[in-house]
Length: 130
Length: 130
DNA sequence: ACATGAAAACTACTCTGGTAGTACTATGGC
DNA sequence: GCCATAGTACTACCAGAGTAGTTTTCATGT
Image (cartoon, rainbow over all chains, first blue to last red; front, side, top):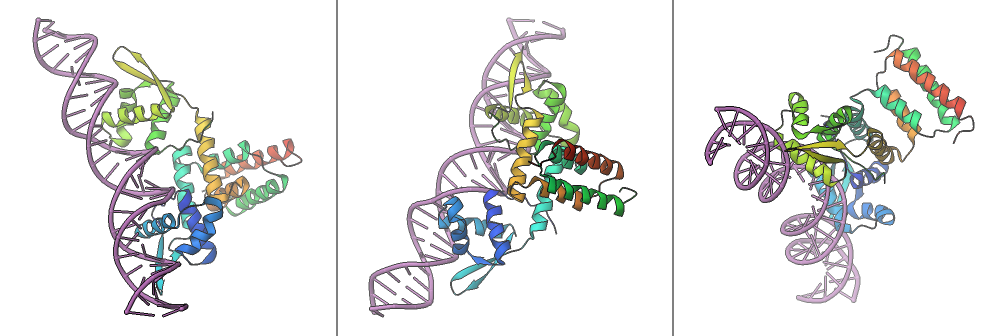
């Protein structure tokens, strides 16, 4: 399990709807994304079917409706996609990746505090390094 | 300029060769990647042509040979791809992205020191937050 | 019983990444 | 002068993401 998931933009948007609701029909998803995307209902339905083929979602029926639910967790997808990019751009060097993010982007001071705390925590719990 | 570049694995591998050498012929690139990928020379040549169509590389001729050079910097591509993912997965919240990387991966103590230093540096130079 | 309308199924098309075979061509060796 | 070879051009194919039209089906209100 835990294959390598690479989801496109629309697929992620759909997954986010499912993750936040637990389950939803195709038209629920369509309604949820209508505002930001304005796609045809059939587009959403088609994507959901394709995503089901790939094991990203599953469905049960409720009358004539298909109620879809996520088959992969947000964590699965997140780590899969991040690791992939980390591999591709930084040859798996996560620290370099993190450095890049911190160095090249604006981060407010509160978030910097949290990062400092996180690094300190990490240092404490892993004194040898890995 | 600075469009949004999304490069696949092979494309990145090719760009890395070009970035590190400045320029290279199709067969130079092929030779450089033969070990790790074992692809046909025509595959590399085809990719290079497609990449030229998209403005990622350009070429000059040297007798029979096409000498390719990068038209985008590693920085361009890096930030383009990272920002895209950050947008998709963390809705642009770079600090959350960095936290995720640090929290969920093994990082050795030397690298942790560097990260600590980087965060400290960042805090000093940006005392207001952004 | 039948029309309506909503939902799913089917089909289709575009783009991009990846992969490679085949065809053409120009150069260098002899 | 001619051929092998190296190198590019052209063509083709697959898969996956994205997009949507058309057709079928079926529950339901009248």
